[in-house]
Structures are given as structure tokens and as C-alpha cells.
Picture 1 (cartoon, rainbow, N blue to C red):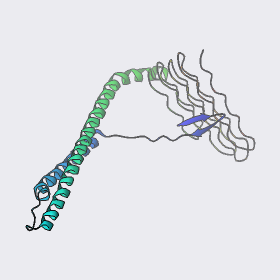
Picture 2: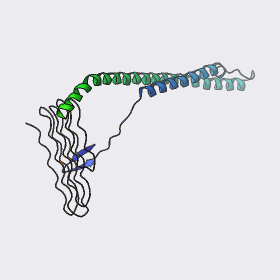
Picture 3: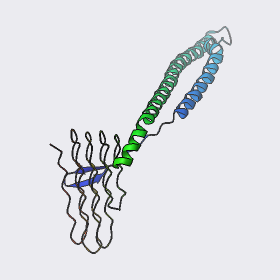
Picture 4: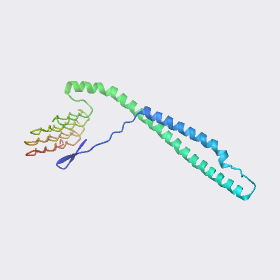
Length: 234
């Protein structure tokens, strides 16, 4: 993802998290099994460690037995707290697995309804009803795709090709009724001649949205010109 900073641009890298419902459920089952084994071991050790008998009738033996019994009782108290935390952790895993499963089911239901409509709109008009436009490929100067007619951001323009002369950056895609225009692609660098000009930012949504920032000019004997940010519709 590219964010505009002043007249230039800088790249911001975003990490994506992929969650598998099956993996969460398997992890919850494995963690629950570990807890069962620990609970059984703690229960088996409870009696011999919390009620230690004195080796003899003297005071020293009684004091040692009391000391070990106290340590055993403290361990059982900590073990009970750990078991409670463990149960909460297992419950959290199960709840999250259920939440992700419900979200996947909802997304699947929405796709069943929306995909045919988007497909028809894409064939007839070249853009979907709802959805973001595709980004232009880097190094090609490809323009970003237009966002959905109703809702969707325009795709970002691809950066210009580098070479003897820098190629122009792709233009950002326009939004529909609601959405933001795509960012213009940066101009390519020229090794001998001029750098390429930056691509124009895409227009913002007709009803709501901001225009995309223009791409930065590429480096060269003479740097390319940075494109202006697209104005939001009145």
C-alpha cells in the first residue's frame, strides 16, 4: 500500500493475518488435551504432597513434614489458578473459531448474491457494482481499475517503467458513488534521459470520497513532473 506524504510518496507495508477455522479448532482441542493431562497429574499428586507424614515422633520430623505439606498445598493452589486460566484460554480459542466460522459463512452468502451481479456489470460496463478496482502492475505504467459503480475505491496506478527514458506512471482509478480515488503511480527512472511523469490521481466518489494523490515524477537527467492530486467532486 502506498501513502502520499507531501508532494512525494512513501511505501507503507501492511502485514496480513490469515486465520484458518480448522486450525483454531484443532489448537483448542490440543490445548484442552494438555490441560486434562496436567489436571490428572495434579490430582494424583495432591494427597501425597499435601498430607506428608512425619518420619518420626520428634519435633524436627514434624516440622519437615509440615514444611513439605505447605509447599504441596501452595502448588495445588497455583495449579488451580493455572487450570482456571487454561480453561479461559480454551474457551477463547473456541469462541474465536466460532466467530471466524460465522464470518466466513456470512461472506460466502454475500458472495453468492453479489458475484453474479458484479459479473454482469463487469461484462457490460467494465467495472463492478461493488468492489475496489485492481491496482496497476508495478513497472508497467498500467492505470488502476475503476471502483464499483455504487461503492468501491479506485485502484492505484502502477509505477512507470525504468529505462533509458523513464516511463509515465499509471493513473489512479476513479471511484463510483462512494469511495476514494486511486493513487497515481510514480514515474519510472531514466538512466540517460528524463524520468517519467507521475500518473494522475483518480477522482473521488460522486457523493462521498477524496481524490487520489498524483504520482511522484521519476529520477533522471531531468526529473519527471509530479502529477496533481485529483480534486474531489463538488
